[in-house]
Amino acid sequence: MYSLALCGPTIYRTALFEQLRLIRGDIRVAAQSNHISDAPSLIAHSAPDAAIMISGSDSLNAVTDIARIRRVDLDVKLVWWALSSDAVELSRQLQPFEVKVVTWEASPDDMFQALGIPMSPLLRTAARPRLTTQEHTILQLAADGLSNKAIAHRLSVSERTVKNHLRHIGAKLNTTSRAQAVWQAVQWGYLSAQTLAS
Image (tube, rainbow, N blue to C red; front, side, top):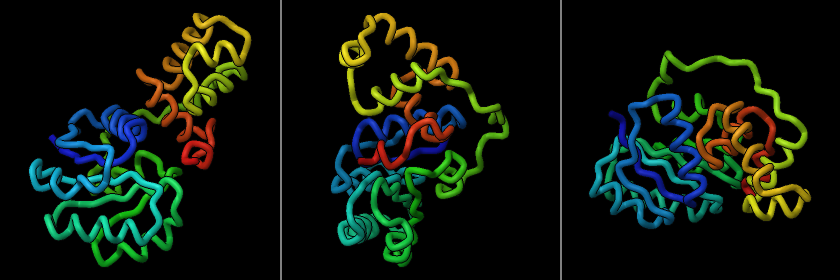
């Protein structure tokens, strides 16, 4: 079993973990928090195999946060999932701390590579699923944080129709939650990573 410490906003933590777990069933969350400042104590107490920091912070804050983590654990694999920062500059500044930097555009394969673990050989290589225009619109509104009721109001349809569309989207993308569907939609190119990170 491969253990992760995850720090960052709940929706991103959930989406990331669910996607990684879909691909490899042997991943578990050892500890998690909404705040990167909690990472040193989480890592010290849970001793994960790797820690993923999810943030849109500038590189100065990232360096400060990572330096605090490295004072606690010099060996844990660290991955910084940059939501909006310049990944090239961030990679350069975090290089002395042996931190891998990935961006919103990163595929699950990129994340597994950054973590230093192979993807499951059982991963299916499927054709890109087809979403209808209405499904795409509903998925975008869901990614924007609108509730089913708000989406229904915006599109002048019933809440039940929205739920049915979301269920169909989940089936097409092979996901079981809204967060997973959003993550998969980014990977398939249906949603813009920049839009989600804003």
